[in-house]
Length: 121
View 1 (cartoon, rainbow, N blue to C red):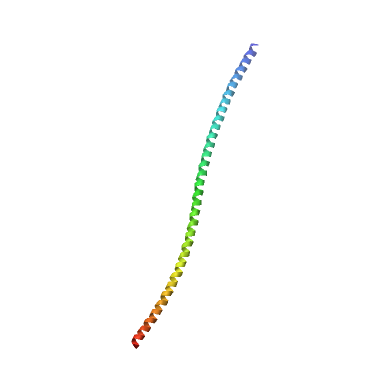
View 2: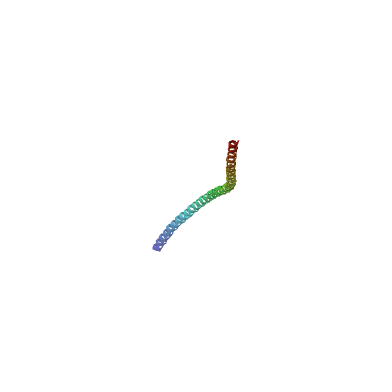
């Protein structure tokens, strides 16, 4: 009977030791789960912040692109206007050159007539 009692006490001690180890492991697991949850929350916050910064940067770039497109459109309109004015001015220059040539020819003709009249005269 004494041997059974000793064996029972040893078994109970062993069970108590195993229970303590199990409790310690459960506490460690609980602690690790909390640490993982906190790390996950921190990571999610960092990802959210990065997404917000990315979205903001993307909006800025989109606005700059839109401004560049508007500026380009305005420049193209100005360019077309200036090209039209340049073409008109070129036509006017050609017309004036032609008129100048005609005037010089008439002047030479008249000078020749004047010279001829002076010689006759």
